Image 1 (cartoon, rainbow, N blue to C red):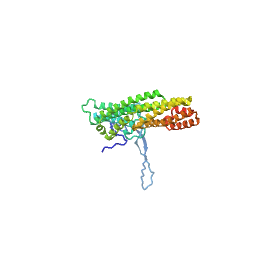
Image 2: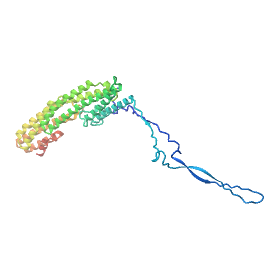
Image 3: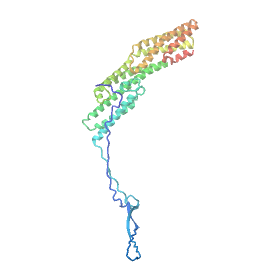
Length: 395
């Protein structure tokens, strides 16, 4: 049954190879030899012999003395291991050289561990808890391509060692090689989509920070990185086989297909962004110029024209962004741009009315329409953080 696996260590330990050593020791010898020596002690025993006759006679008491031996430990300075004695005999140990099969198994285990680490690092880059490769999206905040590729390279080096000089690399080595190729292609595709997201985010951020030259450059970068991501995903599909990847149980065929679909959908999200980005930037530039004329110099006639131009730019951007289907990690940044464009349309409408009131010398209407514009523009975080919004509020 083909099911998406929950997060787990796909590379379960293949088994720990223990190289057990053998050792032999020399006999320590007789306990008494060298470590113990006899010490003679005299023990007196008393024997009493009584002779009884009818006539009382003096009793002779004969005392016999005999010598016995007891053994007590002494430190023999001439014994083995002591300064004055012969050196102790070394204990001989022998270590068994691992067999070729054992070395091969250990190297394969190392390759598996490195691929496991690469997958774990990939999953850890997700914004939340990731149980699948599909959980890692374009806006992955902790994506570390260098760390992942380092583990993949280490695994490939180990596999090269295993297969060196062999005509048939073996089933397990072949499977691990296929998974290493999969991880490399997946990492390259993910990196390309992450770079694409960064360019989109940069274009939006610089537009509302009113860094218009940088925003224009970012828009061109979006186009280039979109093409690079498309090429990387094409290579991913062309150079990997879901059947091979599924053999290890790390990634199912369904998960593989879902990941490819996700990557392509995220790239497609910005496929039609060129014109909306251009219109958004034009609207924001006109808004900034209009606020300068309105709040800075009270040039209501010129500012009115600026606000009309800004409203047109925001409206075109909103229309273009409305048809964009945001997917995956691209959803947040595109929604932010879309919301800013819509708020820009309504906010500029109020500013047009405020400029007209200023030209008509109607300060009360001008202030009311200005307040309405501030409320509308402030509903977008991007517009609220812009220099023009702050200037308008402080005027």
